[in-house]
Length: 314
Image 1 (spheres, rainbow, N blue to C red):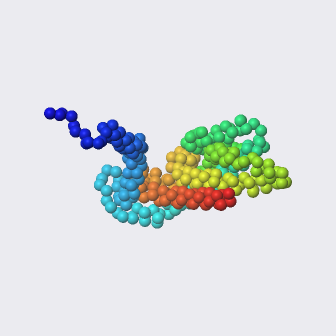
Image 2 (image 1 turned 60 degrees about the vertical axis):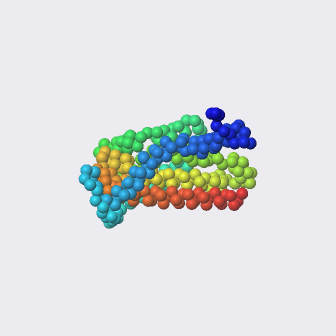
Image 3 (image 1 turned 120 degrees about the vertical axis):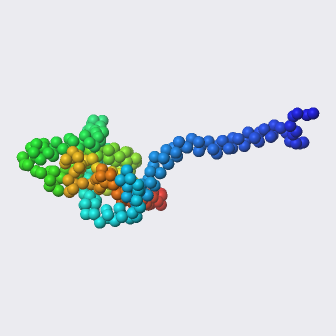
């Protein structure tokens, strides 16, 4: 009796084995990439996607962390949209955003242009010196500025010879926050702008110089148009960081929770978490998240429009 399996007549066993090996490699090539990215997908689902979806569901509920949840619909959202301090916090955040963007980005771009064009001697010294404040933690920077703007024993009041109430006057207090953000963030945006300037072809400046263009004309007609994507990136990055601003105003004025006239929008999230109102805190988080998405969408459209315009010119 023949114990070996019968092979169909006319079919070479080597061909059968080759087809099996090819099929195994094909399956491996299709499944292999998913096996490698599976840890990231699992971490994304467990640590980000599922918590985000749960926070959206939680924003429509009342939950204090120790009892059962109760569905209340849009009550949390209506509560904040009709709450005066919520809108006051948004106004404060807008002032920190716009005022900080004007000071920080303008100063960073000016320094980047001066260093790139060689107007400042000793680039190797000034680059790390300008970037150094950004290495410091926001908490440490806020504590330093707290001693500078202290009403009674502050360095600023001692220099100007007046007793200004930086922690009480609304205008002066917000000015101090903007100064803190400018000092702490200028270095990072300086590096961003400097990197953008290095991508511009130096031959463009040489050609403009031959045609008799002055430095201001080269800056206006060459540097600014070609730096548009970098400007958009910097503005959107600064906007997102402004919407998430929390440590600086709170530590600068009180070392804990800032007075209402200085509180950013993130304080609404913090105060609701502190009081155990997790459903309300989730609603605030989504009310902060929506403007961030809108800003990101604007950035995408503007960058895409810039790329299309450059493609059409070329």
